[in-house]
Length: 63
Ligand SMILES: [Zn+2]
Image (tube, rainbow, N blue to C red; front, side, top):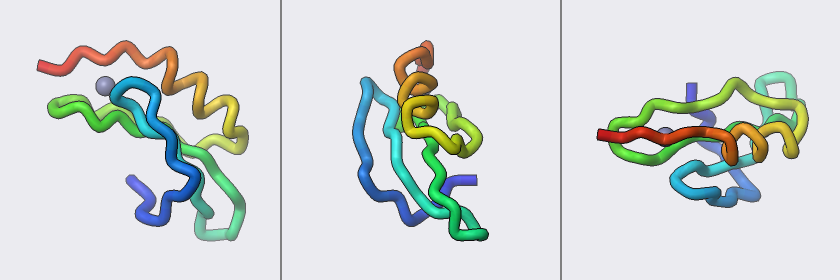
């Protein structure tokens, strides 16, 4: 699932990290790869740092 109300979006290589609120109003952070052919997306993290780390360690291999 890709939340559609991202804010504080940054880009790390092809991966975007954004902050959003979940359905319970909690702040969550998700990394999503925007490269064509790559479906990488993390589950929402409670920690921004964790989401950014996941973005940095993603090994993108688009075709
Ligand atoms: Zn990727």
